[in-house]
Length: 446
Image 1 (cartoon, rainbow, N blue to C red):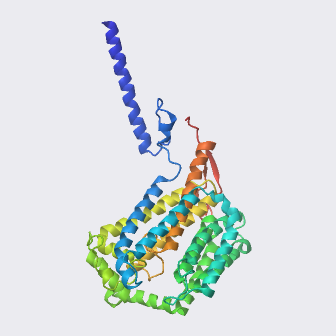
Image 2: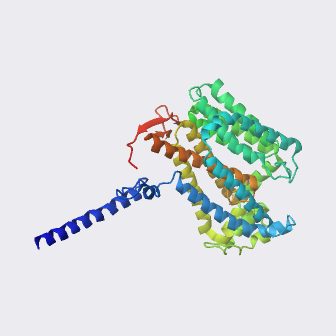
Image 3: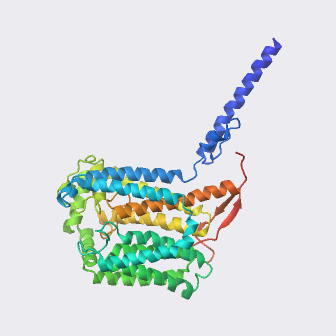
């Protein structure tokens, strides 16, 4: 009898111990530390199922953006494909699917392409990009007052230039990190780089792409350790040049005037502003339903490209537009998180530059559509129809995943966490990306 009681007591004790293991695992999972969950009796392969060698939230966000974008392109492009292009209703959608395949292939390749190789490839890549930009100016086909594409506008080098300039500047700033306080070794070479790239883009002309490149260049210089005085000088020069470009360019001047009129009274705004406001007004809070919008059929300019956010507003309402803004905000958050945990300063600069670039493109497009800013040529990444932008955006995502993957690999294989932290404030009032710091973290058994 005593033996039986002892067995029952032992069984109950084992059950209590087993029940206490689950909350520990759930606690670790909720805390985000369940890379190697504590399952002492499970084989290693089961434990590794809970480990992903890249930033999974970023992948999830990109998948949602791609799916949502494809639905909106299918809805917005049928009439445009038939009337404006003289093709089948699904022409633009099918092309977007084709370019999606190219972009996904680029993303997968760059996910496993060690970004440190850009130290050797950045200069040749920039050289090829400059040649492409020059060819656009010389041989590009002019459409709607601009020559932005090669091979019948299938390739837009200005989109390629944005990503390559970010990578080139990251490599250059990393190599000059100890001399950025020097005007002759820091600010002047930076101004020369941005001036050459921006000048070739402006010659197309593509004012919005030129402004994007210059602003991103200045921001990366700021993060890398450039002094506030130099940043102020660069900002002043950029502002003066920007105002001159707007005055010289008939398109830029007209867009700025339309913006001011629409800001004072939407009824007095440009035709584009009126139609986008009409689309949002029809959408209300919950929208007309995907595929049921009418403004895209009644004169909304470029519904599948520049104005696709207006189609989102009409068909999914305020809730849908807020959801899109939230998705891009989360994308920026994950990109900066990857930058913060990058193995070195170069990785931090690349990740910060790419994530800020994509988010900035999105917010500039959305702000232009609702007349918070003048209408620009910035498209809505992963939404607007366009092969080059889609491919380059996914290539940037692949680069972010590579930086994330190498960060995880460094923590696992070396038992150390390399952290190039984006310091928001230093003692001297400068913002910068610090040199790579190394912190020891305990190894965990497999």
